[in-house]
Image (cartoon, rainbow, N blue to C red; front, side, top):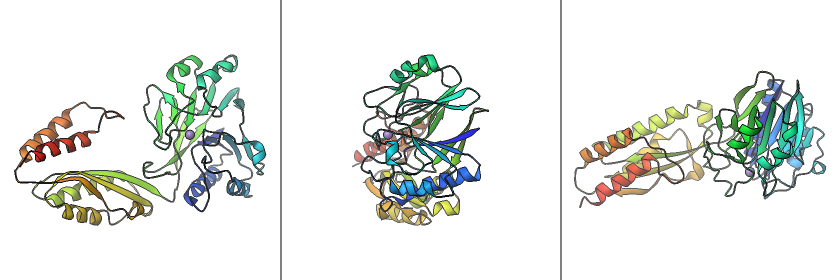
Length: 354
Ligand SMILES: [Mn+2]
């Protein structure tokens, strides 16, 4: 027995964000193709700015999908969702924390988002029922171990902690809320199935869980748009054009996208460092990424590129670069990335090269 899980679609009006509806439709189509009968949506199906659910209702009422069971767990954006708001018969709104049977004694604890509550508090109230194996699906942060923040949400509540996990021992945990996707041990941050904005980059996914084998499979969502947000570094090497072209080629290779997917890319490029010819760098980037569209037709951002004054500091730069590469360094919200450190070093070196 398998079910699919997604989260954070943030549906708003279809006119404003048709790509979000397309993502959902693509998931439903993939469920039909894989003969999977159930989809659990782990919160924030709708954006908080939006309270007309007709387009969703209409989509899931399509005769193609009426055999699919859709369980919606409200998140912090759609905390007020009620069963009575939907006409579609295949939609169930999980208004309260609930243990749902899956198969062979395995149960699913679905936790809608609750203001000023932690998941641990709710788990406590269910503790006598949480006999293994059981699966947790909720909407909130996982704290300790995974440290990813969601820039789309300035505030993140209803955490589940590694201590809760140790205590109640769910077999798997699927969480909505953090739009980034991550799988660490039994903790799965599902991720949004469609990039909300330029910060949510790359291919998106939904998950399929096999209740019998305990396997979690990742399925790529065929989205209308694939956001990419890249940064390049420049400094006055002999041939800045080739230097940038090499970085562009590597970047596109790392995307590992098909030609069809490349058409969907909306790209933002930020350049850091020091250049002896900014205009040439900008043109090289435009040419190098000619196969894709820039996000909102933005130009590459070279505002952080300083002008190279006289002085040959390449030996110094190479030495900084090697030292940085050898450094065991973890970037996070507080600590900059190695690229950012390197850019700061370039500024320091060239800023003094009068
Ligand atoms: Mn949320």
